[in-house]
Image (tube, rainbow, N blue to C red; front, side, top):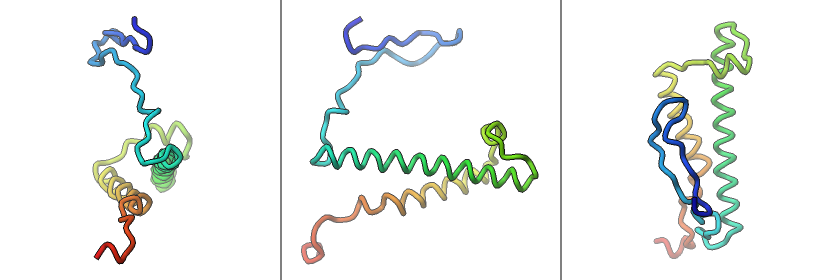
Amino acid sequence: MPAGKTKVEAKVGGKPTYATDYFKSDTEEQVWLGSPHIDNLVTVSLALGGEIWATRQRQLIAEKLAEKKIPATTANIEAYKSSPEEDKAWEAQRVEMARRVYGVLGRSLKPLKEQG
């Protein structure tokens, strides 16, 4: 197999997969936002947002369990099955959090006098 190529098994656990072999890209070496430092800060910010949402969702599940007088253990939180209504509400909360946290990344970089 050529260097940098990863072999993907045709079956996993006796079931066929739909993955294919791939070559690792060089995207980690690219500069997208004009500076590798800015790229790194944005990457960190996005990762932190994901961690915050995961923690918030676990907290929401723990609160639901507490309402039902069920201990909020790791096993109970991970086994929790949300309702379609909860999924919809949580998705709306996630989108709103993303707007609050990341909305600033979409603002204009032009001075106000140049925007008008």
